[in-house]
Length: 456
Ligand code: PLP
Image (cartoon, rainbow, N blue to C red):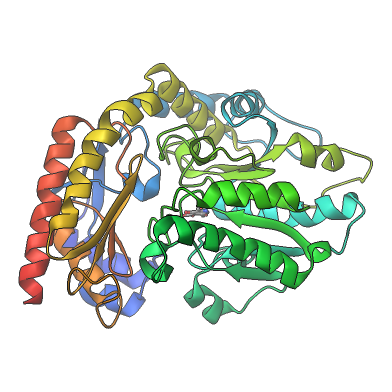
């Protein structure tokens, strides 16, 4: 059964423009243009009020791993709503779904991560990280270890501490910075690699961490936070040399490694977690998005035995938590999602079938006159649009306009992609089929051709 829209598209657009402030949006520009009104989803497809069908190349917002419209999740949430729609997990209470989900997550996530602190989102998970890291070092008798090192173009969310640990300059400019956070260069060879080979640059970028620790003083540094592949920063896939060198540095230095798996987790990079793909052993691991395939909001921080040794100690209460930490309906959605992912081998099949098939098509777009670099890992990729080839140094000015033009053209061609600066980003549902990948590739090609023609 579907809900038919009650009002016309124009009515929805009018009331939306009058009352709704959208995330990461230039409100005035949107009101001049008006929103698309989405009403329905099924598999990799979504529909708007005018009946237009779009291939959802962004899996909602990097999250709908199992695709839209799975009835089993709606049923599980419905059952939970009738049984216990809400109760909190403060004050020595829990409920069956929160306990069950915690156990499943301890099983699924990399070795040593046996505890979860539930949150309502990825941003809340990272604000939790901020407090937990500092709490850990205080309990470990090293209260001076306060500084968290993040990376430029990192994205860890929109709450205050998460935005500070992230490296989005615009966010810092608008709201100011939180003290005790330091940023280093990301492993983004296309922009920052200069004359180095990708492998040389990977080592150089990793040693940025070592240089920062020396500069700030190891006794003052609490943690390094990083996404395995930086998503919102532009799908920055690090050179193969990067993570091994970071692993070496983390093993030699006394700092915690926080691996933000909000995008990379739950199959995106070809394994259950980006940490599996890159052989990482996180001390803390924020998760969200693919945990419930986005069907209901839920996030969490996976916490290692190393951190729990102090956290679950004699230090007393951890003054932190959210009303919706472990919300029963969200936990039911996550459990149903993970059940589907395991039973249908969604991650394994995406890695062995969809990913190599899409990658071959995606990487071939490097030959298009508008594309300076095509990159993809698992089922997440980017195309860097450039004014001239073969130079890697030339960029459109101002940065971002061409990306936005291409993204809008793509939408009109029935394919949702995202633009970051002048890169087009794709991160489709993991269940995408070969036929749907063929369709996606046709729409990408048309979008590149149309954009190229528009720029002439
Ligand atoms: N961490 C990463 C890596 C993300 O990409 C995001 C969102 O895109 C977040 C954290 C924040 O998650 P949320 O939007 O659920 O707060």
